Amino acid sequence: MGLFPDLVLRVLPLVVVPALLGSPADSDWRQDGGDAGRSGHQAITGGLNAATARNLRLTWTAPATRPEEQIGGAVVVDGTLFRSAGGPSGQIRRYDAVTGNDLGPVVDVPGRAFGELAAAGDTLVVESIERPGLRRFLSGYHTNGEQRWEITLADAVSGGYTLRDGLILRSAGATLSAYRVADGGLAWSAPLRGEPGFHPPVGAGDLVVQAAEPDRLQAFDARTGAPAWEATASGAELVAAVGSVFSVGERGVCAFAARDGARRWCDAEALESPVFASVSAPDGALYVIDGHGGLAALDLATGAPRWRTGYGLYSEVDAAYWAPVNGGGVVYAVVYHFAIRDGVSTHRVELIAADAATGRLVRRLDLDVDSLHGGEPLLLSGDHVYFAALRKLYALAPVS
Image 1 (cartoon, rainbow, N blue to C red):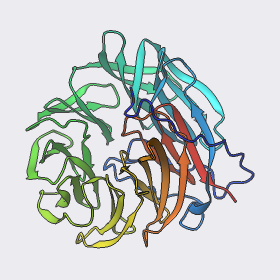
Image 2: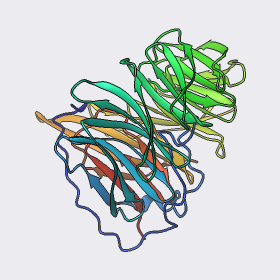
Image 3: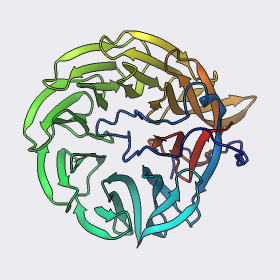
């Protein structure tokens, strides 16, 4: 069941697009967050920038079409969007990333629910649950659908996984494990001083860093799993880039040196209860979103606020349950609003686009989302933005 199982929103018609700006989806987005640091940054956005983002429109959708189907994840590889889902069977389905043309399933496994999806080279990595026994699996498939390997996972709460240099870095229970992309074999495992909950590890330089709730950071050598350093964090949500690891949570945002865990700065004033962040090395900024209608840019080196803007609609709830992404001078986020007016409750889900230099909102676009659980991936590939909601995948691009 989704986070909002009875959520009813205004339904938007599918826009018929006369002409798209920029190039096709020519830049890959191979895992949640886009890279091993889960920075959420895309360097190549074609014709999508702060000027054209105001013309973002819904260009195609891929709704769930099978009974009880729920979307698990999505990646973009060489102009093809791969979408994982669970329903009567676990599926990985292909779409033309620009036109939305359905190219059909490449993987279809009865009795499985496919979840998080990632790609390394020509290997697709997907986590799944078998029904009705609820056994967990991690599998590797060639992009043509041929299975390369499969391993059984322990039944423990997982923070998800991150791909880095031929390894699948996955936290579950009180253990961080590294599996080989080539054959699924275990390269190493290391104990954690607590459980990660639903927070995945990130790659930072030669290390992998994992947060354990509520406030513990542990770093390990990414090749061997040897402990490197520990620190006290401001929260369990992590992103990493430019030699730093950034922790985000109820106590604010903190930056740590990736090499030794030394604290560089902390900010507890810019936003109320920050929840997610995205990094842009070219902009020298950390873009942070909170659960109370706020979005801010902090200087990477000092933590000094550059701007703060509001995405709220003065609702009872103005919140973000999804990590933002950035590229082409724009920050993108999916946000949720719940309001009660004259005894009538309303729900609304939007994609917002903010100018990365000023924080000015250049686009607000309603999405007809009817079921959510939070954490669904937002992707930025070429001049397209994608949101893999629970029951429908949305593709947006600027329209001339």
